[in-house]
Length: 217
Image (tube, rainbow, N blue to C red):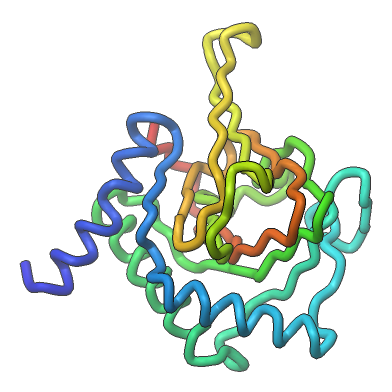
């Protein structure tokens, strides 16, 4: 194992172990503080240039429903990516390769967007995988908030199923800059709680082609 392989294992293995053990994986050092600042700066520049739009719901995401979700998004495209965005997407690509080598999920592609939640907005409880499209296997959220405080809210609430509805449990995760959260798109419902200030992230999904679903759990 060379240095790059060892570095990848140290960064990615806790995510995989977390999914296997707890249903979700988390690592606080997926991005360095400088990378968080760089991506957050690009996010704000693109929003100021009018490139963001209100997020929609459903498979085509064309229906805007503010009572369900209030974030603004911009999809990241390789062709128009800045150096900071390309570096992020390359790290995701390395993560995809690692997951395929260790978990045999057959991931073939990924899609990511910037997400900005204005103060007071939220995303109600939902599941990321569509009924008519099962290609999304892993949901990935990477936060771009600097010096986030618990009092500012904006936490991710993940609902872990029990043997029945009464035994369901909830995990609350703060959107700390540099932190990455990953979970199976078709298994865990989740929601974004309101924050008292802007909440920033890069959010996306690791996807298969038409390969049947394989669970990590």
